[in-house]
Image 1 (cartoon, rainbow, N blue to C red):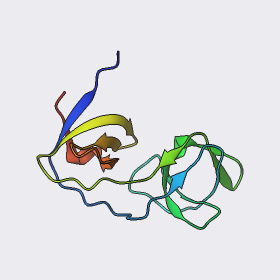
Image 2 (image 1 turned 60 degrees about the horizontal axis):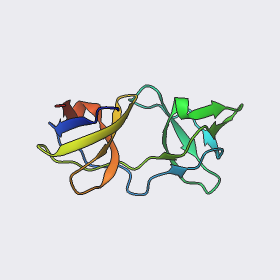
Image 3 (image 1 turned 135 degrees about the horizontal axis):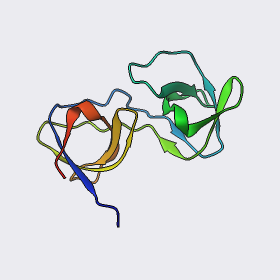
Image 4 (image 1 turned 90 degrees about the vertical axis):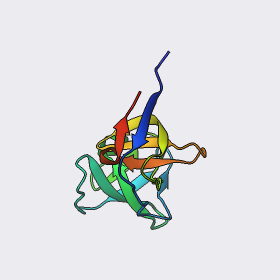
Length: 116
């Protein structure tokens, strides 16, 4: 059985994108050259014109666009110092977390100290 990872927020983080990109497996995205401070992420835009950051390894390169290898949700989680988080996955400097109110989203790893 996989051990659940627990973290404590050591630095508050405010979600930057209130209307996140949500991608379904197989969906095509136009990939731009927009630079990220986070290596491993690319800026993608769906057919409806909604854009957001997507982990590069979640996309298959199809010459000028990417095709999603899996479902992906770009929701970020606003957190306050001291909050306890359950960490479900880690990707390119970010963690998909759930707080004690059962809200989920991405939080930069630099804001979290692993405690268990």
